View 1 (tube, rainbow, N blue to C red):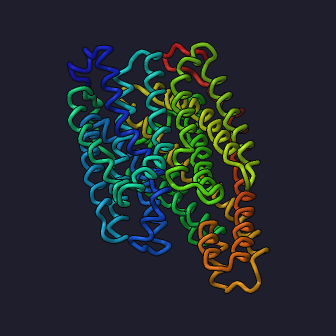
View 2: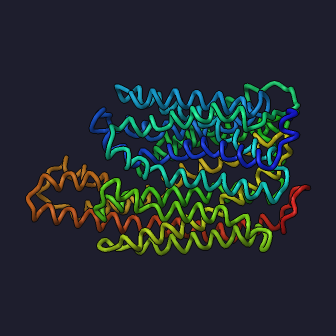
View 3: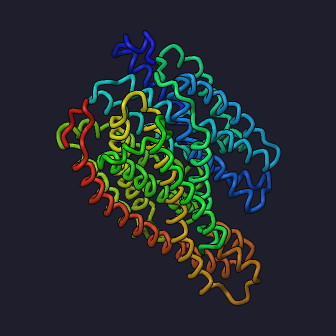
Length: 514
């Protein structure tokens, strides 16, 4: 229940508390993308196998996606600030373990623990904001800042990673988390009020297990199908298990007095549209960043640090539009601002799909900035609607739903858009690869652009130039196909989600326009 401190929480204290709550948001989102820059160095030092490399990248996301809903509910029961502090301590300890990991196996375990800690941080920060900012207009601005921190952290990850790798060893990309976590542990008890639900019902363990069984097999199946470029039998089994577990989970939630997920919230089209919009926004943003980082380094030929700096306009666009969304909503309403954001992001996607192999740096950076500028208000408003739709006693669980949709959207973005680009790349490279290239080298060339460039470095200059040009053109063609697909998804989002936001009822305390 609210403490006396939270009831008498002043305006200045609220904004200082919000500044503290942005710290874990930036860290957890930054760790989603920071390995995009660091993974080449890690593979050289630790020499993980192909599957181990995949797990180093994915273990963190698996932990986040599987535990967000559970941790949102735990926070409602034991106290959201308490859960925030416990999760922060775990996140800091796991970051230290990852920084000094001697083997790939230890690094994978540390990344999984970081995901566990991250899953406690995200819903805790959102639900605390829900209770700190009871005025709808103030809450929209606060969530805009929260979203700017989330999206900015995703964009900041490669930049921080590139800068650290210029001066330090690969473990520094994890160790950077520790002083920030230390500051959070000191400041949060002083500036952030505690809140927990007065409901005393015990956590339903069977629902927790069902949530794992619903989410994790589906995410694993998506990633497996993307890696194999085919819907294999194990992937199908994973999808079936996930769907069946999800069905049982939803049936059980309808029968529980204190459910893990309040499925009744989805009866409101406004809430459903916001959750769907959050997932599709992250689907497009993370998918295009997956290609943008590779294009800047492997096609445009920039170093990791310069490539990271070239992504600064994206971060500026995301941060600015996240805050501006709160100014636009009172005048135009949620549906129009959300739809306009999706349309701007879709236009950026279509421009990005036309980026050339040569002299395309400016086009790539500007298109990416437009995508970020469109995605930012979508994420801000979707989060605001989701948090505002739930009663204060269930805001942790509602926040976790929004974050779970975003994490699943990010996984789908890399899996679906990545598989589209990879399929076209592989097809074109195999059609044009030199006949005298050894089968092992040909297989490496067809796996990725980075591998093709590594093989080309071992060939005579003329053959190397031919292979590099072939691989880069194939990659850009795959990028074009994937971003067109992402743009079409955003066009559909610009039509469907505003309709849902318009049809749904507003929160009783809301004063926005429908």
